[in-house]
Amino acid sequence: MTQHLKRYLAMTLIGCVMVSLCMIVNTAGTDSTHALQAPNLKHVLGTDQLGRDFFTRLLIGSGVTLGLTAIVMVLSILIGLTLGLVAGIERKWIDKGCMFIADMLLAIPSFIIALVILSLMSNSMTGLIFALTLGWVGRYLRYFRNLTRDIQKRPFITYAVLSGNSIFKTTVTHIIPHLVSNILALVTADFGKIMLSISGLAFLGLGIQPPTPELGTILFDGKSYFNGAPWLFFFPGLLLGGYALLFQIINKRIMK
Image 1 (cartoon, rainbow, N blue to C red):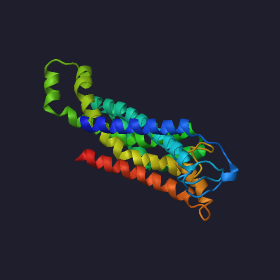
Image 2 (cartoon, rainbow, N blue to C red; image 1 turned 90 degrees about the vertical axis):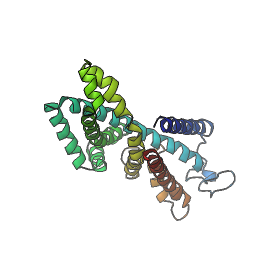
Image 3 (spheres, rainbow, N blue to C red; image 1 turned 30 degrees about the horizontal axis):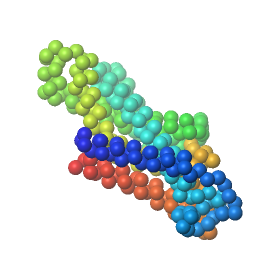
Image 4 (cartoon, rainbow, N blue to C red; image 1 turned 45 degrees about the vertical axis):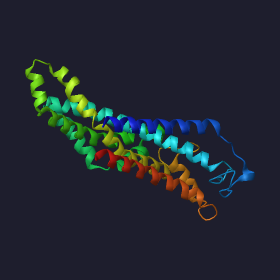
């Protein structure tokens, strides 16, 4: 698991650096004289309706989409891990309360929760992060709570307690490391789903607002030019599907 973690973290870091460099080096402005050019040697994926290099737009949009997905994922896991750990150890009214919240959140699809919150409360990037975090935290809360319960039944935990270790020390030195070791599999399993939720909401005009480039908003803009410039719709959709497939492949390799 450690080797897998180092390898995929390195790949992620390299990808982020490449996207950042492209954002810095190639930030071409609008040029209506080159609008809707088909893919060519100068613009490998053509240009959009404002004459901007579409390859650059997709790179920047990928950075926004992946960055927001990472933020939602980290917040959901941190909150779920903290509450799940407390619920799994206490086993009293805190456990019942946390499980009641988790069951309510799990009963409603995360996309629907985000749709309602963004429609009624805050249709912004901050609102998007809050809505999707709330929609996904129930899954991680229940997962880490059940995992904490299972770990507490193992012999080394019993031995640690009988050796005189406090609950706090046992939790920090034994339980938490075992919980963290399962995070990579969770991330790769759910990253693509959260990413598609972000882009799906942006496509519906919720969350990310123009002119911020995000794969969902780019896809939405492209549908208006589907007949005359199909690459504006085809390439963002292909990229989204490719990212989702990539994380599923990584997850399967990790789970072997």
